[in-house]
Length: 417
Ligand code: AMP
Image (cartoon, rainbow, N blue to C red):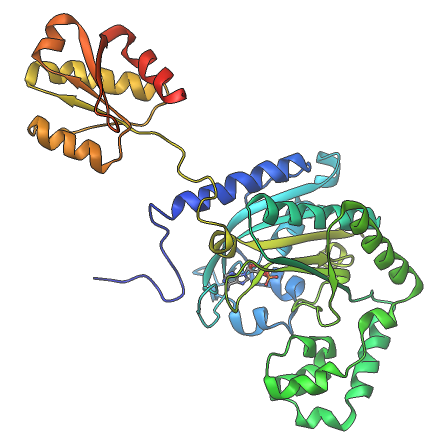
């Protein structure tokens, strides 16, 4: 046997229904909020993420599945969706094409991380992005959309955490304040943090090393260093959350691991799914479109992990709503009629099954039980001669006979009850 690659996973019948449910609920919500779907290649130029996600991020430095293709180009499997969607916005001039550029994407992402529960090397995201709107009302709308996603999936024990990381005008002063506050303590931190202190001090807040935490907890908070317009923006966002009635917690440590965030950053945590409990995360990225060669347009969005939504969703979340029916035939002559009936049931929108191996009626009924048929339609010599079908209720074992021509309508009306 040649097994699947470490950190990847197959999604099998029994579980796939939960994925379909997440995807269906997400699509419905996204469309209600005015987002249109886009689909992009899973391979992109490595440069898109080096520039977009950021050279100094863990994703770009350690986690990309990047390679040189046969033509000598540097290619990567996408590690995240935002740079791809910014590329789409710029490359296809979506600003002209769409009244409001609001787009979403669903699909696999690839990161060479250490696999564990809830963390994979190929995982799947739902990603939404909206471009060109600076007003804090859109930040709150995006948060409301994220909240709708987790609540409509019935996910319990969730918490929205938000923060503001400021903008190009006020962030440098905050980064400086961090370095100053660290002072000599920097040498007591892990080697990653020591590197972060010189290349991107905000990233120190991402550190999970237990010994570093007391020092990190004493560091200044970004929201105390916001310029007047970032402060006003942040206050307006939380004000709108009050209007929406969405509970939130301000987390000073929420800077997120990517370079492009400005102002609002957020995550939804919880869902009783273990250590990897960030269900979704995102924020505003006001400089990214320009940085990737587009016009000077702001943007905001988030990505949710489908694996984590599926894990956090309750077991009874409305999956598997079909009611299968089974068609059983006794004898060769009945078989042709049964196959015709099978086709008619399927054409009428029902899930219908039949046993082709020509087994006894007993083994056919066993098969009907295994597929959890609600009704079984039986055609034997008697029924054939009378132009009728016997319909057995698999729960009560009650049986009725109806004319062949009315059988599909009869089954449909029984299942509608
Ligand atoms: P990020 O793109 O890192 O901000 O992550 C956004 C969301 O994607 C997270 O909140 C997770 O739900 C999900 N996610 C990120 N990385 C992984 C991974 N390696 N495996 C599974 N889900 C992930």
